[in-house]
Image (cartoon, rainbow, N blue to C red; front, side, top):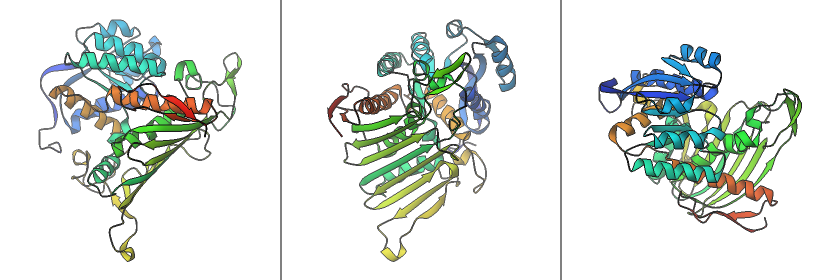
Length: 402
């Protein structure tokens, strides 16, 4: 039985045909989720029909390894197929808008990896296409998978219940070190035309989404700084200029009056995939560390001072979000489970005919904040007003120096 008491596995009915575009790092993570989701959750029937990539031999090998029925190299012909109802986009950011808009126009439900696009204009076009498609019953979702970490889903519940009171500060640091060595070769993630931005869009986007997700708030002002520590990387034909940031810093003011500080780096020696969140309210506080993703530290400041102190909550009880589908209490789950939860929620929303979350509009809100940080950095850290960080917001404007 799943956590809601329904029978496990895909339900009877016409199977939804799934096509996934991209088979590298995210393609591997998503393939694992598609392979496992029906074994643990009650979801509509689906079939992993086709994996799409540019290299015929590479994508064929990946399809066989990851359990896709076939492979293809032309995404346009795949989304035109009548046996495809879902398109999962794991391709680089510069491809997101074209593929997603075409898939939605073809009546396919679309899941796309974060960040939504490389530019605000692309993200706006995607959000418009998603809104139009939704009126025809076609659903779309952006893959901010950390919303599906059970501990962070629990943190959101605690904050919504008022356990932290009025939140004053939110601190987030997402640190990696895979670019620490200056001899690490050039990749599409280091080119602005393919990646959009560096650490800012790649990992700071996760931290920014957590601010919006956990606090159910909106950003009204942003300032930031970007830095590239290694300006050139070895390319296939010699040194190539890096055109994105290695590290990013941002300060965000929220409508509630809370202030969030964001730090992201891909040159933080010794940090492999460290996301630490600290949320401080007038009635309590929460700490989270992705390297211990089954744990949440919570302080109840309404207790007498002599009894206060952070207590560790092991988020492994069946009553915790998502966990009831997995193992007995105390048996931890991992990073890969967040994608399984994501696919589960996407399929359930499609089956119920309701908009999944986070939406392309939510992705657009994050994209506008990323752009505001870039604008601030380009003007020496000036504060940038976001007139409204919802999807229907007006463009941000630089208002004053830092």
